[in-house]
Image (cartoon, rainbow, N blue to C red; front, side):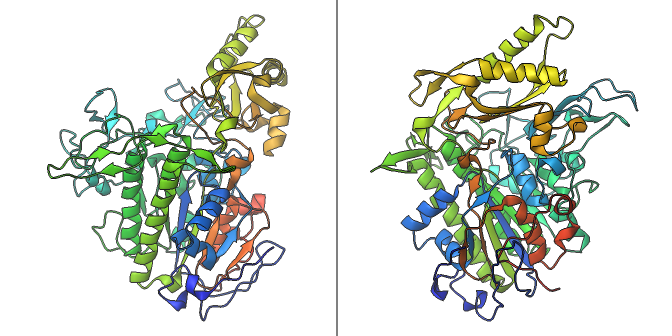
Length: 599
């Protein structure tokens, strides 16, 4: 554990000395979760900057010493050795933050997965009959909102506009995308027919009921505290927790990132894409969630229409860093409006990282994304101070996931479709009665296969094929490359996969075959620079900063995990971290140096 010397002038809310002065200092011990007890906070603002590494924070603070991120880092505890869940996808990563659990207890391995214990959506179901297995897709296709016609491609849905009652405008006009602020997410936001089926009673499993652990929102809600959260998919209402009927988060705001991106005047972006593939659009999109958080700090609901009080737990995720890391080239900024009310995007610039004077640093688009996040955190900081909440609010900034590779020279994109097809073809030669072995799997920068026959022999068949066959890919310059072992460095199959995740072989949710990729491998077309979900260092080594009253500034180098955020949030509010089922089963502890609060 190393300590930095910091001055009161660099406190995250530097406009007032109250943040640090007069508060009981928390002393970090070698044993995680120990600290001096102090008065509970009234509010915890949790921010996930998806994709942001610890190295990004180090670089940004060093080059922007007067930034909001620098103030937060210097005023709080910087956990410089924080790791995400494994897999490190958005869904298990976000679920870890909210429950304190890894997939072995939460049951959430990816946003698109498969379960041998459920029936497929739409499958014929007889109550009590054994499960036949099926896709578990908790992602954008589950949205029940009426599609608004895409201006260019009618097959796609676009960002809907809402009236003040949260109803989609008749005719589906999205000429004023800012009206998305009136979106109201609840159980009616979904099309349950897209969800997996529980074979016991043939009911569709809502996303919060698929979760194996309760959440911080449930604990706070039951304690009479208000809760709120903003994220990229409505389906992340799963964070409500099992048995909640989607009501533990009092104010959930989930504008769909996969919908059509339109400029503030309603005109589609020139690229005619969604909010996650044009950096300028992603900034506009994240801006709606920022506005929601600012409204909530000010004691209003996310729309700003009703005064309801500042939540005890609230926050959002940022997408701009993740999009900037993955994009080869994109427009980073939207300019306008001009005198005629029109907008234009800046010329495309390189995304990802680049080598400068022997150092790997953020490129222009990623640097701009970090500037954007910093500016928005500054707005939140100012609003907290303006509302007199500095002494009663703790801010936690971390990330659901990182992104790999950072070094573009290591990138090799490999299309996984031909590999899956070849495995199934090889299997079919001796299994005419079961021609399709791999029935599901999402491979970003990891390998996951779910099998129609998940016997150990079948799992070993897939493992052997993957390990003994090369694969064709492309380097960053789109030149052909051959990689050995299908791009993998280690494979767990059947019983070994179950042991890896710490679950029984008969669990039914874990991937039957699971693989760690060679660093730099991304299973995709050669259009990306990076992806997340895997277990290489850049996938999992993320920033984590905790700043607030009573938090003694220092750098904590003890290894921690993002699962420790959940018990820490409850401890800060004076609630019992052991109320979380994942804490009891997995043992995640309050972050070292934060300490419990007395209520």
